[in-house]
Length: 291
Image (tube, rainbow, N blue to C red; front, side, top):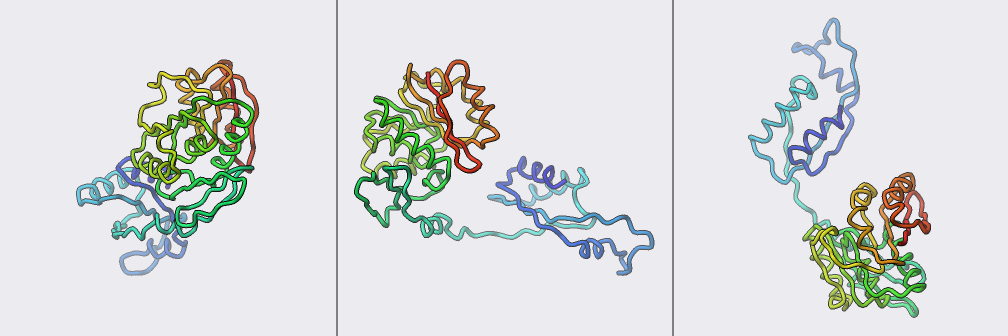
């Protein structure tokens, strides 16, 4: 029942849940009678689990409601009571920075943190400050999108580009470094946009990128190049919004897709667009389509 229990907790505001097993011996002890002796005819013992749920804030009223919902669903062991502990943020962003080393992507990019600023002849330096937004270049979907951007910009003239779900801003910054003069970068997360603007400023390309929370469906311009590194389910849902935004002979890059999901994503964009190819990287794939 653990997934269903986690679903209830998330619906009540949990940020996430963690599961840890309880041994059968502990389950046996939990089924002893008040005298401490095993019951004469114990029920078959199933493995139990401990479920930890994380909340920004826990109140007595919320705790009471959670207990009532879980108990009504018969998800709590008889006699169990919740344990509450406070967690102090150890400084996740700083810990990220300590692990962020320069990486080479494709033939031309070198991604570096702002405290190292390494340079390499023949490579375009992209400075990224790790934060809460996705996109440092380490993930296969990001690195493959960057490589695909590099190849398309080498083969085609791109006058205007769109970065959907910009996150850290790394794709929009790469577009600017590749010479695209007009770039729009959108994201529905204000925290991500703040991180993206900071990174664009670090790379001295802030004047080339228009950052916005405007939904893709509300855009009126068409673009020669669109990159969307999100999730396959979101890409399928956004197909009616993204297809009209692509110019004739323009290219659409879709990433954040598991290889087993690729066919369903492509199907959402056909026949309005034409499938060009894919770049596979382990379990991940990056798709290229054109009008």
